[in-house]
Image: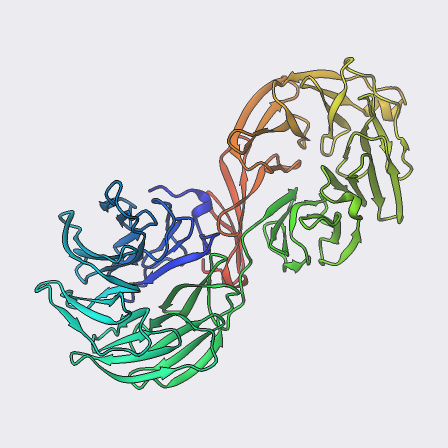
Amino acid sequence: MEQSLVDQYCGAAHESPLTAADYDQTTGAMVTADAYGVVAVTRQGENFPGLIFMPGGAIQGGAAISPGGSLVAIGDEHGTIAVFNTWEGTCVFEDYAEEGARPRPIKSLAFNNDNILLASLAGDGVIRVFDISRWELTGKWNGFGGESISFNRAGDKILAIDALGQTKLLDIVSYEMIDLEMVPGGVRVARFTPDDRYVVTMGQGSISLIELPEGRIVQSFTARGNSGMLNIVVSPEGHQVAAITNRSVHIFSLPDLQPITSDHHGADEPTQAAVWDWRGVGVGGTDGQLHRPNTKPGLPPVLCVGGFGDFRVTTHDTKVAVWAKDRQKRPFDAKRRFIETRIDRDGRLLLGLPDDGTGVQVFDARTGRHLLDCGRDTADTIKMEVGGPIVAAALRDGGIRWYDLKNNTVLELPWVQTFALSGSGTWLGVVTPRGEVRVLDPSTGKDAIPKPEPLADVPIKLVSFINRRPDMLVLDDEGVMGMYDLTESVTKEIPAIGQDVLDFNVQVDRLWGITGGDYAAIRFQEPENGTATVIYCHLRKGEVVSEVPNLLPYAWVDPETGNILQPARGGALLELDMYGQESKVSRSLPEGEWIVFGPRGVLNSSDNAGV
């Protein structure tokens, strides 16, 4: 199962609630799964998941790693169970719910010690045991509930919870059902200790310890004043058990079940997914991450990205991270969620468009200091740009407003249809109501050069400057792209005469001129599948050189490098070259770490990124 560049060094592979997790104490292998059905496997010796895939439907507890870490079992909401080889990702066993049968979402899975038997607990109350080497159903028990199932070390008994919330041992050889002492209030989760001497159970607010083989309760603990327990996990060596609540992880000693410590786990909205691995207890959250007590929280998934030259921006809920020359600066809290961001080519000013109906916000990109609120009439703006000290935004009721932060001035033109700023902020290209293009001086709002000669009697729809060159691109209502060389218009004060470059038969919504003057890029939407396509053309040859489809609708092109930027799984910004090949990933990792890498390896990383 080939991994893409974006799946490498993926410390947080999930962007929906983490719903299942399992850990193999002998090898350190781990599997996590989420409500979207994404599965991530971290194999022996790996610091990051080396296998990320989506086998089927949503997962609600049905994930297990085999002893030795060579296999992973996944059960989804449809009742499909599949077992995969963790080294190649090959499916080695599969079982489907019968067509028309009662729904049976898989709640829990467990391997026996020699990886031949797999037990499943389904939502229909049936426990099924499969011989995965023969693809056979070998056992079936009805009338079970709870949220867990597990084999003992010998592999001849299954620990289960009946429909009344009481623990049972199922002998898979004799089919005998062995009752354990009744736990007052019932049980939702039950675990063997690693030596099989005890069973630890969890109720709504209590933990009980049952000694084997007698099946008697020998210790119990009832919490007072808590909001209920979500799960319990036993430490790998079997000397402690952790109870997870909505806020905290409570550690108890075994077998005396005495409280040792309590810490906040850091998950704002914890799920029932939890593991106890070599690093301690990890608690799943609705943000798709494993949260650990006393560690720095990681950033949420990426909402939107931006970039220009050496600089990149990723927004994570209300947090904003600026990347300068493949190094992440300390993220700052913008107090709002942004759905679009822009940064100037010198990395000084950052724009953010909030999703709460407020206007464009301006920050110092180097410090995170808030500089300007552009006002509610820039809310939901269709375009905002920054170049040098100039910030410009289209207004809700038409026209544009721009701010010269160097001279502390504000100018507004109500008749402008669309606009573009040069990368230095020297020129402001605007389109008039008649569809003609003019080039203004942002410091005065007056013409910087004579009005360029129209290429045809067709209104201009889009305008863009070529980065670091005195060239301007226009696109008219008929999809024809033209280019102006403004050099003589500046030096001789004569109107620029342009030339047609290429005719596009698509509804273009964005136009970029790339540094060097050889290439331009356009973006258009594919509404039937909710994606976007970026087309690159050679300006001198007047021909299309590449087409990159299946992008996110808001994919952005860096005018300096020509790379396509868009959010990606695992807190990442993915860069694609003009041929659609993955060229670089800038990723925020759990616990405040980060990494930047490309096809040839790591380009930069924080000190404790684990690479």
